[in-house]
Image 1 (cartoon, rainbow, N blue to C red):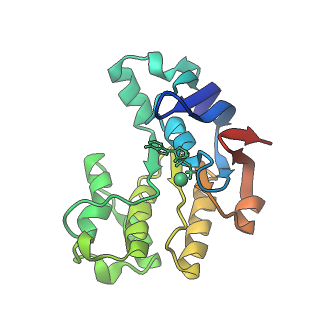
Image 2: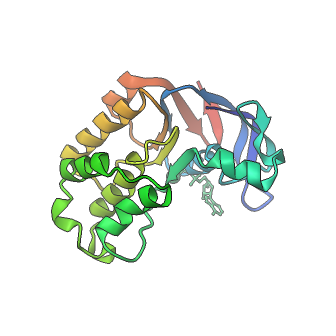
Image 3: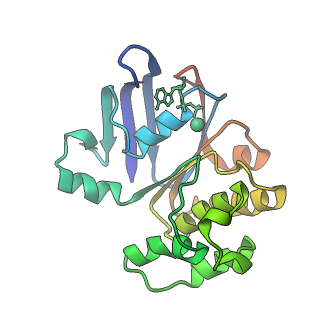
Length: 214
Ligand SMILES: Nc1ncnc2c1ncn2[C@@H]1O[C@H](COP(=O)(O)OP(=O)(O)O)[C@@H](O)[C@H]1O
Ligand SMILES: [Mg+2]
């Protein structure tokens, strides 16, 4: 899949632009890292790449077609392949198993082997019957990440995926993200960049006050 932003501007209030003339292209596979301080526009940019926000000005070209000029049915087909993971995990009522397995269920998959492997690896086995409301911030983060890793989407967009995680989980998640980037396109926004990301990224972007550097 290929997503291209052409001269994209974005404003929440119609006065101040939080993204200014962004041009970028992500395609094929590999890891793309968007870095920048808090407030620089990373989340907004990721939501535009994930086809959640429509740019105030400019175009989003997906596989050669202008996404926001497509009809609703065509948009759904395209958006289906792109999964965005919020910086603040949103979990549903119910237990942990319900939350991690729902995505697979909704997509009609009935092989849960990889999901179960992930659950073990991140140490969530004991929590499967726990209510999502009882989880810590780090546990919520793990649930929100595991449920999308299990889907193996073509494009995976992760907003500050390492927040709230202890260093051992950060290490596992880095390994999984890097492995996934061998077959999928993975975009990460992060305000701190660890060496493993730098070493494995096909491209690094730096946002400064809504403008892209480098
Ligand atoms: N929903 C919103 N409404 C109004 N302003 C927003 C909203 N979300 C973010 N902003 C503003 O847009 C700018 C960029 O924010 P954001 O994209 O969240 O940056 P980052 O993810 O790099 O911290 C900030 O100045 C922020 O205050
Ligand atoms: Mg953010």
